[in-house]
Length: 518
Ligand code: HEM
Image (tube, rainbow, N blue to C red; front, side):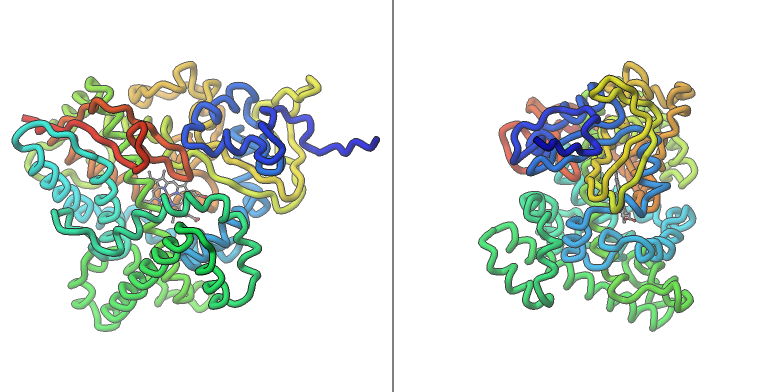
């Protein structure tokens, strides 16, 4: 009998549940939190897991291995083919649809747009929207505490924040009027494509089936409601992007006065990008289709991440009234006059910063991402793991084609790095120097020794933008309102982006009791 050995045979990990599903159902279910955590607790920085048809994959949270996967050897460990191909179909040739040098060229053009200087200009927009949100909630709770689905409001706010400051376009006045077609479409995108998680994996085959028109026809024949809805959503997003883009371009051609008349007053990401692109050398310049592709990419990347993070912070504050009171004290003391705080003052409020960091560490809105080795490669580990045969493993030979789950959650909650209270929400940890183990771990993440915004050339381009918008919203909300838990069990559902719901109910929501601060 011939026994074929696999290079990853010695790596320990949980047994597959079945040949067909491997550990797939344990990894990708809405309540996989404990399973992800157990991979780190039981097996260390690298665990072997099985995908569908028992495809051998790795769950990685070891800092040095992550540095290789996301930074040093990032062009070996690219996004998976199905991710890139399905993103191209949905968002066009934006940052989520390109690889290698092409992606690098787009980042080069986009990075300066996210600079601190531009962010400073966006802060007034963030405040304006936060005040609208405040007024909308105040009108509902002025006569006494009310149960309010805060996710509904953080989602509308997050869309308006990225709409105005990203696209220079207002989708929602945060009033009582009905939502427009675009906001309805974009809000249902993530839940809809979540239903297509398995089908998306066939995208690399699908895109080879002839020209786009033919594929579109084929797509319309697939007997699946979510496929049809995705098509509708993509069409609406595409139509809107083209319309906004044309308006922007014509304003730029008409000159400064016309630019200033627009929502965002020409300070939004797309206006800056368009201007920069016109001034760029031939070699650096992006094509029009690439600029268009960035628009829905930005909305998609910014909306559910930000709204989920804001909702998570508010519900965690509701569970910890002492922290909420302490935070409110910091905010009210900081507001010396009626003015909103400027960029530097808002960014450097220590307790607000600690609350944001701690929530994003413990509850990363994107709990994992996937990558795929595009050739055989060896990666070293910071901490050796014990192989199945009892010997220490210091480096791993990864075969071409292996899928990697980058364990954001696992890395952020590692007790060897963060201490025994790694799984506890404790903002105070950020107010004194972090333990030496955190510095020594050298986690490659771009944000506060965590992986929440990832690392390397595909790390979150909007991470500073996101900090600032969240702080502006939290400043206004927490000084005005008191948040407490409603008598309902909240489930946080793991997915590409995590979202809350009430136990026993499907649709995303997060009810909290809100009252005015007297
Ligand atoms: C709490 C909020 C946010 C979190 C936790 C977050 C997290 C992430 C993560 C983990 C990635 C990597 C995804 C992957 O490789 O598959 C990413 C990428 C990205 N994010 Fe964010 N993000 C947040 C907010 C934002 C905001 C507000 C913006 C825009 C203003 C933004 C724009 C992007 C873009 C464009 C990418 C793609 C980058 C690339 O491929 O080069 N994100 N984000």
